[in-house]
Length: 85
Image 1 (cartoon, rainbow, N blue to C red):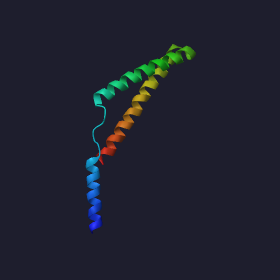
Image 2: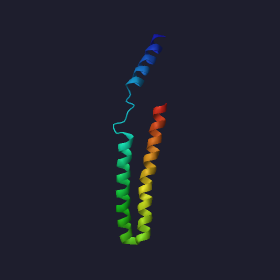
Image 3: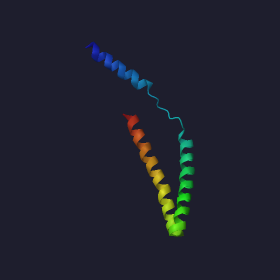
Image 4: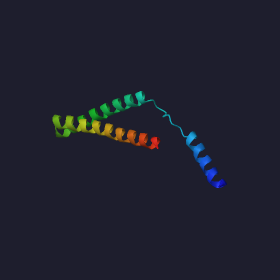
């Protein structure tokens, strides 16, 4: 019985010591993601437009920028799901 109580106490203590706050605020992380996704989308669009044309450059630039937001959103909700448990 004593070992079971010790395990429970250790688990409760380890749950309390886990950091819940991120090292970036949500506002600054969204700002960074917006700037990075726009710049990478523009750069990708420019590179593709030189090879395939303007319309395809705009399309691939948008797809690339949207893909960054999709990955960010999946990671955000996955971390949120993990911390809920």
